[in-house]
Structures are given as C-alpha cells and as structure tokens.
Length: 540
Image (spheres, rainbow, N blue to C red):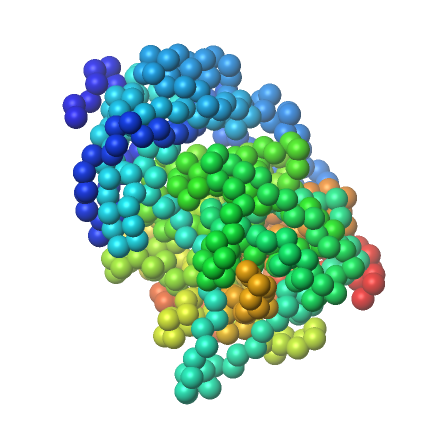
C-alpha cells in the first residue's frame, strides 16, 4: 500500500515481524479494532518533572495532586479536538478520551485503520500463535505530528512476559547440591527487617496485570493460612476489554497475578490492593499504567509491575510514552517498582549480546533484581545472586541500558560500561534486589494449588509492600525513591550481595548489575527516609 499524501512517519513507530514469525495473509478488513493515540503534554516537549526535586528530603519535595498534574501537564482540549476531527475524516469513532492520561482511543475497521494510519495490517504466525501486525512506520498528517506522541494497538503481538518462575521438582544430584527452602512472604520480610509497627493502612498498591486473574476464595484461604489479623482488600479494575479472568492454570498468568497479590498483601495487609487488568499488547500495557497512575478513585501510592521484555522488543515510541507515564507518577508522589527480568544478562535474547528488560530500564522506576536467600528467623545465613541458568530455572536480569543514559542519581554508584561491544555507558539495572530464586522461593496458593514461586516478579511487590509500610509511618508518600536510596549509606541500609553473577556481570562491593545496591534492611531504609526507628519496631 502506498503512503497517503500529506502523511509522514511517526518517529519511533517502526515495527518488524517477531523473530520466527511468517506472514499468513492480510488482516480481516472488517475486523473492529481499537487504537490508542497518546498525546503530548500541553507544555509540549518540556520535561514533566524537575530531577533536582527528588534529591530533596521527602518533606521538602513539591508533590502535585492528580488534579494539579492534569491542569499543568494533561493534553489540551485543542489537541483532543484535532484527533476527533481526524477520526471523523476516516470513519473512526472515539471510544474513550482522557486529558489526564493524554489518551484518545479510536475504534474502527481494519480497512479504515489502514487508510487512516498509512499501514497495511496483516496476520502473522509464530510458534506461540497468531497476531495482527504491521511492518514499517505508522503515518499521520503533518498537523497531528505536533500533538501526537505515539500510536498503539494497530499491532497486537504479545508485548511482555511475566517474570515469575515456579519451582520445578528435580531428582538426582542437581537438587542435592542446591539447597531448597521456601518462605512465606512474611518470613522473607522478617529476614529483611521490615517495619512491624504498621500494616500499610491508608495506602493503595496498584498491580499491573496483562493476563490471568485472581480467585477471592484462594486469597481468603491464603490469608487464613498466614494468620493475618487484617485481610487485605483486593479490587480489580478492567482496562479496555480485559478483566479479572482466572484461567485455572497455576502455571499460567494466574501464577503472576496471585504472586503479586499474595506477596504485597501479606506484608501490607492494611493497604488496599488494586489489580489493573489489560491486554498484553503495547497499547494495553501503556493504558494500564496510565490508568493506574491517574486513578483518582483508588489513588495508588505505589505501583508494582512484574511484566516486561527486552528493550530490543519495544518501539521507541512505546518506551518514550511509558517512561513519561513514570515521570508523571514521580511528580504525583507515586513509587513504581518493576521486576528486572528472569533470564540473566541476555534477557533471553539469542543474538549474542546482553540486554536489559523494559520497563525496568526506565530511569524513573525502581528496578528490582533477584537473589538467592538462605536464612532463619531474622538472620540471613547467605545471600548470593540468583543464577540457576545451568538448571534452566532462570537468573536475575541486569546490565546497562542501550536506550536510557546514566541518570544523575547513579553518577557516583560506579556503574560500569556495557559488556557489549562499544562499551557504552547507560542506565544501570537493577537498583535494588530481594529473594527471587525459585529454590528459595515463596509459598503461594494459586487456583487451589499450593506451590513455591520465585522470579523477580516476587521482588517488585515485596518492595511495594515495604514502601507502603514506610509511607504509612511517614504520613506521606516517599514517591520517586531512587535518588534518596543512592544518597543513603549503603552499608547501613542494604545487605550488600557480593557473590555470584547473572552471565556477563558479576556481583561486587557496592552497586552491581546483578543486585543493584543490594537487598533491603527495611527499618534502616525507613529511618534514612525520616521515620523513627523506635516507631518502626513497635510491636516486635
């Protein structure tokens, strides 16, 4: 199809087929699909946040309410009107619009979308299934380029994978040389000296989920098994056409959803937990994040994300829009915790290079890596880098971003150059760590089945629970926490993990590209952020 006149490519929108995929034929021209238009801030391309603001102590930061942020940084009405006019010209309907989220969702036939965006949608098939895709760039009229940041949803390939690993039972010598233990989330929190005075009351933890669902009966039984005095309130929010839809398969996406809820809820049972369910596409992922960040009904103060994919699998427009959503979260005092990936330093890419996982590589999130934890009670016996690649049970992600430059808060952390040819500098991943090895994993209940699950998927909600406790103690959100963590005394606030590797990168003293600053000493971190140690330990 030739590109319509007066249309030019949208920067960063180029797509290629998935590796191993082949074209089946044209997409059904009469299929009705939704496309998400992400608009620019009313301030244009100016930064959404002042980085220096987050180097200040929490009590001196300027945090915007959601209403204030929309007024300053939302999409203006003229931009929305321009997209609405474009939709009418191309026989598309406006399904949804939000100035706060800078989002307009259009609906129409594949034929109309092809014509409107200068693409040719086709059906592709790979070993994982079929998807609707495109190659090349999306196109828009020149007048829309000034107001549109990205176009998502034309291509509905699976964009991300969950970062959890169920423990596999092995026989023979392999397991004999690898000590296997399991912990409840509360036992892990005890080893990491989480504050015990509060329970996260008044906080809301948002979970981004791209499939599966939760069963309230399972949750009730799990809370009962843990003897919780307070049962967490868990709600579901549907984003687009997705919903809380348990599959009945504990090894499928239900495992991710339940792990997130059970780890966060066990350690912050007084917090409200809201799971935002969206389709596993770039549009679905983006819409779930913006919905959670700008949710003025539930008002999440922490968002936990356990899904992602190698930076090389994303379009630049998707990474830009999601990173800006994380900037918005920072401006409104919302902490975003993201799993760093479960496939070592290559992130599962077979091109011979090292890759980091996105969205963990965004400099505006707290990237969470994985360790192997052995301990009892409140005493850690050993803690090393999680690496079970030899046993086909994964390893923590981590490394140097190919996309995002080194942020100022990491400038003194000793982040090395990339292990790839060229040895460029960039954002170091992860920032922090926690227990993730499935051989030292978390006791869970999924679809009626008890089991042990690990993966960096457990670490993001673990940190989310810790931050909920800290927020409650401070009476205000810690928000974008990275600059403060890097300013703190690492020896006092973290268990420095110095043994092991994730492939190309090895652990060492201080920050490293396997476990970041280390695993948490919860009370010490809370105290560094302004909480009273005595108050943190009340009730122990």
